[in-house]
Image 1 (tube, rainbow, N blue to C red):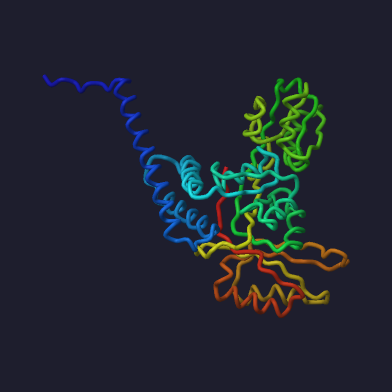
Image 2: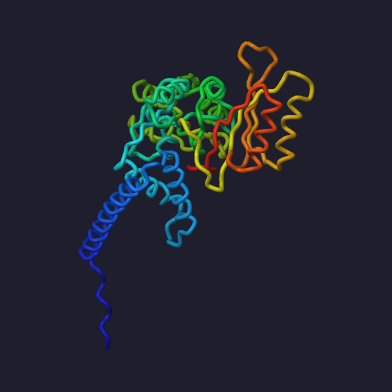
Length: 362
């Protein structure tokens, strides 16, 4: 009678895991070394081109994933591998709307990984100024939210300072109710105005007696909730972990598809990838039909617009700047033709940037 196969012991499994872990470390070391040699072999490649190339390769790798691992689970791990390799050659300097553990910080880490030097600043304007003064390689600013619409401070700065969009991050915003006390003891809920607004219905139903109080940021609200009795914060899970707060309720946003889009800004736009968008800013004459004539240019050139916003011109009542985003890269012929035609009908025209399309991340 044949013997039953010997059952693998816990000791054997530990040895196997240790061997695999060592192989992972060896491969990581080899990848870092290969990336450093690639940077040396192509010194003319811009940081924007390097990031775009990494993003493209990452998407190809995920699209060909035939393992049992889900893309949502392995994407952050692979992003960190890219960040590690990039940081071995040069650590990027990234400015974002702080403080740390805000959603802007979360979006920045999604884009650049943890191997970057992050600089939290107090205002959106300060992010742009960090780029202008060459104190940061990249900045990250919110552009629009699926609930609250455009972010006016960002549009205002695009109109003021010559800055290029080279990328975007679409982040699913999941609000957590954080506190050190139980739900019944909560008397005040702190957060930034947008977060309170996005959880209005949930608060009315589950904490009708609690007083909502506005703060400058969700992270600052979490810090306060850690110090004040009877206080709760609406903030990210990362903020709760950092300030040792309990998650009283998860994902309390009224809209489950609550997404904030962030623009990655620098001195140069992104390279062509074949899956791009281009953003423009323009101003037409203040006369009947001027805007209609301008918008008809996009139709004639078969350009699909993905974003349209208007913004009042400073010190010019009833005059507006228009922000549009279209599918395609500014180097493509039909977009160059459209820009040339639009320039003839505009008092002001600027290409804000071209950048690779992205999908929302959790």
